[in-house]
Length: 172
Image 1 (cartoon, helix red, strand yellow):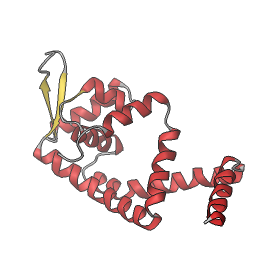
Image 2 (cartoon, helix red, strand yellow):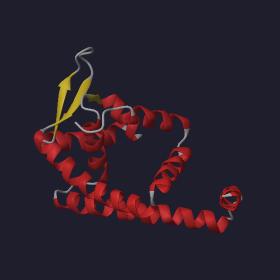
Image 3 (cartoon, rainbow, N blue to C red):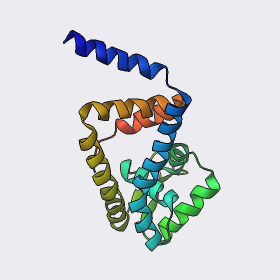
């Protein structure tokens, strides 16, 4: 037991002094993992002439029905012009519905239609399957550690947006 604890401590200490090569390998792993993570949805999106911006908008509208355009802008960190282009396409194609705000009539609240919900499900099923397989292969400790690393990489504003999303109900 003492030997195992000492071994774990040494591993933890080693992580505090990562070499440039170890950091570079981590960066490369992130690039390749992201490419794999987006590959399946990219194929689905290409069939309907959509891109990753459409995917992200659909994801976050699904995650928080009634999300305002202003809030979606903040979450995505894109310009109003680029988001308007994406939303216009999603609305025109019948995937997203824009409703007048209940508290403030100047606000536009966004909701997925049944067609939008079906697309979101198709996109996220592929990513959930990949994530589930990776988590199972890595084990429970790696799951928590991976999330900790990702959260530690976020700047404070992004982390607070992420925390707010974590507090939403899981599936609707």
